[in-house]
Image (cartoon, rainbow, N blue to C red):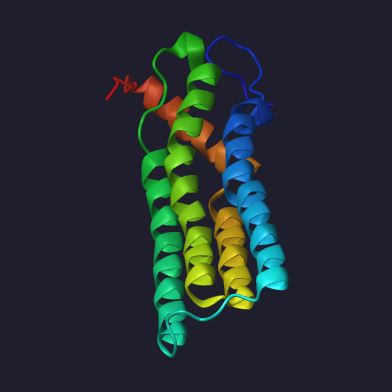
Amino acid sequence: MKKDFNGDSIELFRIMNKSLYFGMMSNIIIPMGLLLACYFYEQRYHPANNIGDFANTLFYIFLTFGATQGAIAFWWRQQLLLKPMIRRKETFQTDLALGLTKICRPVFMLVAAISLYGLIYFFLTGRFEETMFMVILSFVVFQVVRPRYGLVNKLIENQYALAEKGEFYRGE
């Protein structure tokens, strides 16, 4: 078990829980609810394709944007995790939990935008399967970028080393 500067054992779940709950809400619960609403709308009203033959091209455009956003989210998360998050050695765990949440929120919102492309596509074309594919792509990207125990262990080691060198979070 890792110890912080005060000798207290570091609780990994306590550090990860807020960011994971936010990520699950923004990337799983809300997109699934919207996907369910699209499914019922499609079953009841049978929406028409409003953009015609351009629908397939638009799907590939949205797919390309989604894949690019997924790659950007992964890279961005990696870059943000290298910056100092600790304000003082005495508040190591609290600062680390707040820092991880602060970093994960915009990254998770970038990932959630992938599912929004699918919803926009549904309202333009009425095609549910492609919409579901975009929401699933969002889920997969979320699984790649979400914090895990191994990542948090590396984060703790990196932040500990930065704090030992005197590099602290100074604000924005």
